[in-house]
Image (cartoon, rainbow, N blue to C red; front, top):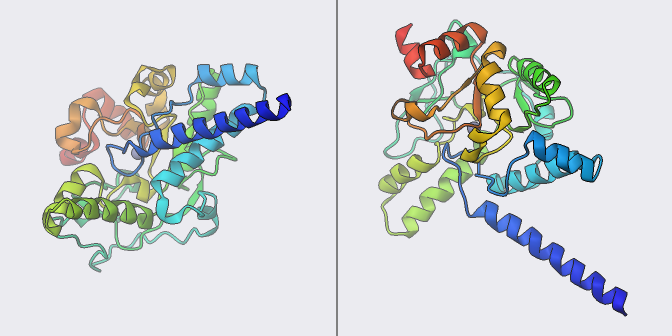
Length: 301
Ligand SMILES: [Zn+2]
C-alpha cells in the first residue's frame, strides 16, 4: 500500500515537472522570430559533464527531449514531422533566379528577391529585405552525425569540423536548430498576425506588428540552411565557455556571429548570441577584423 502511494506521488511529480517545462517554453518566443526561446536552460559542457557523471549515457536522451520540446512548440503545424525526414525529402537546390512572385505577399511587407546567383553562394543575403525564391529548398546533410539537424550540404561539413575541434577542447557545440521549412515559419507568422487581428488591428497593421517579432516566411537564414542555432536560445548563452570558444574560433571554420549586439540597427534583428552563419573563412576573418556585419560587408563589395 505504501509502495503504491509512493508510486502515485512520483507519477504526479513527473507530470507536474513536465507541465512546468512545457509552459515555460510556450510562454516565450524568439527574437529572430523563427525559433522559441528555450528558457528551461541550455546544455553547456559543465551541464553535460554533470549529467554524464550522474547518469552515464543520459545526455543524448536529455538533448533529444529538449530538442523535441523546442520543435513541438515552434513547429506546431507539423508536430508529427521530425527534423530527420528532411533528409529524405531533400530536393535539388534551385539556384536559378526566378521572377515568380513570392507566394506569401503580405500587406505592408514587400521584400526584394534574394539573389541566389551571387558569385559566392556563401554570401547569399537573406533578411527582412531579401526573401528566398518561392519553393527554395537547399540540398541538405546532417550538421553533426546522428544529430538529425540539417544544414545546406555545402555548410554541414564545416559545422562538423568546428564541432569536432571544439570537442577536442572539451566544448560541445550542440546543434539545436539548422534548416527549417518555410511552411513552418509561415504558420507561426500567420498565427501571430491572427493574434493581432483578434486584438482589433487591421490586417496590414497586424502584419507589420507580426513582422517586428517574427521573421516573415522565406526571410530567415534557417530557411536557406545557412545558419545554426547553437546550444541555447537564451541571451545568457553569452556567458558560457561555448560562446567564448565560438567568438575565438568560429571564424577559422567560416562562421560569424550574425546578429551582434552593436549591429541591431543594421541587421534589424535583436542580439542573438546563439545564431551563427556560414560565410567562409576569408570573409569571416575580414568581417571580424573590421567589426562589421554581413550587410555592411556586402555594401562594401
Ligand atoms: Zn537562429
